[in-house]
Length: 223
Length: 129
Image (cartoon, rainbow over all chains, first blue to last red; front, side, top):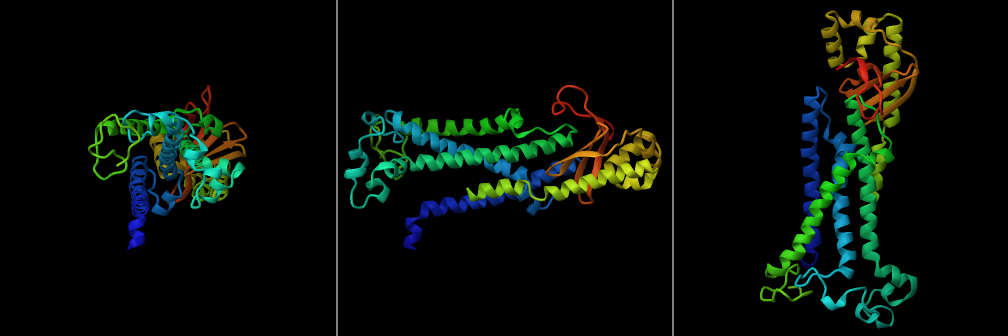
């Protein structure tokens, strides 16, 4: 029970992620088969649908935008601040900060991760490891979106008795950019509005909010 | 990352089998038309395509299909994406196929590009559903 409590956040989001992915599979199959019947074509099984490009392009276009959002948020909050927002660090801490503040090298403590203590290349890599991994997942998801998106696009081209396009040509199509930008805009809106709304609004007990009684102009304070 | 690798790998899964089947269906259709076997040729058409031909020509598929004036030729290239395929012939014509419960069947035959980039405009087909 203690382990469940200590890892509640990861477990909760992991579970609702899986439930949503399964829900998307069944509703996506239903939607796909509705179109198949409308085009006088045969419906497909759930097994066939979850291994299809139609399913995965819809999954990956959302993954890439979420990981881009966090990648950008991680890197921009090093140099950009927002007065009064708990999403921002303090206004006088712009930049990568000193080794002392970041507890690396000789400023590391006994309980610091090993790669933060050893110095050199390993500490440089570890100092950017969150950004590196999040950006890698973003790029891989976006690449996956382009590969599966092209397959789904070309299947539709053939349905309309048009020729297929190659991968580089697909990257210039409105289909690819419409899928990409419709996800990006919503992520950027959500992050921007969260940073601003959290200046004036509060959620008691949440670390995403300032303490309820904190003044609007206090920055970098979490509840 | 492993999931993403699997996704990309799965995207191409079974494509060779599908390409071979689409090629065979087209070959069988062209051979049947060549030998005047309309009955056999019609079994390679999708139900909608057969119905469209009978509606256009006002006679049974087996009689109409051999009079379509197709250029024929051999299969030069097969491309499969999901449940759809395109077969290009040595004559320059193309055919399109769909995969359904009966397997791969022809949905359009005697198709030619109509100018411009072929990915931007539908082919002009002798017969399509």
